[in-house]
Image 1 (cartoon, rainbow, N blue to C red):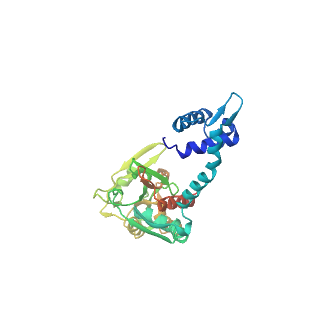
Image 2 (image 1 turned 60 degrees about the vertical axis):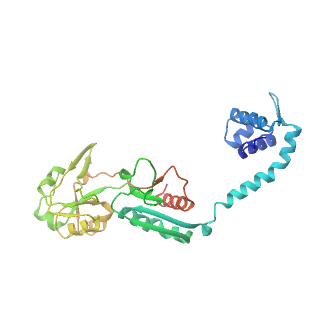
Image 3 (image 1 turned 90 degrees about the vertical axis):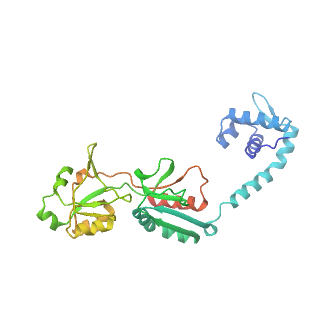
Length: 298
């Protein structure tokens, strides 16, 4: 005799209790035809008829009654066993390794990590800030954090922050001696603080307005590979920097920096936490994702 599935046994018990395929289908979230098909398969596997069916009613046979009498404690025991696999907050333990860019790691340190460690004190978090986009599977990470545009297409991505925009910023002192650019091409006559990407190339500044995109290979004698340093250099009057708004916000608010070309700097998709979809999601990562979504307002 082939051993039936727990799902089919649960479906049989639901039908037998309600004595109705329709009510059982409503409770289980299935169609009546799929339940009828499952019961025919179950009876064929067991080699015995379990249900009397007419156009108006459904009732268990004698064999069905005997099976129904024994199923509830078995099904309840399975539910309890499965519930035990989902530990309470204080019992969740293990490790969670996440790789991300510096901005992504900084974001979760501020919005997720304090509450996560308080709720799950037995989980060890290993967060690695890395400028280069790495293969998280090859490097043994459970997840990564990057801007949406950088997430590999074969990964499952979860929004963990608001939309983000890059801003071109400069100090009042710099702008007092250099007329503010009005369109992106004007940057070609300015001193720009260029960004060197992890692979060695310099980033071309990307702007958009009314659906029109523009990329400018800006000139400038200074290149840096850190957004915070670029902001400091701009504050010191060394030129125009192009950085994520959160890095420049404090200096913009207190007047140390001014934004230029704002109407060419629309918001874009922000940070995403991503992980391989072909693997079972560890309980520690699932808990982190749930808390990150909660922090992001999803």
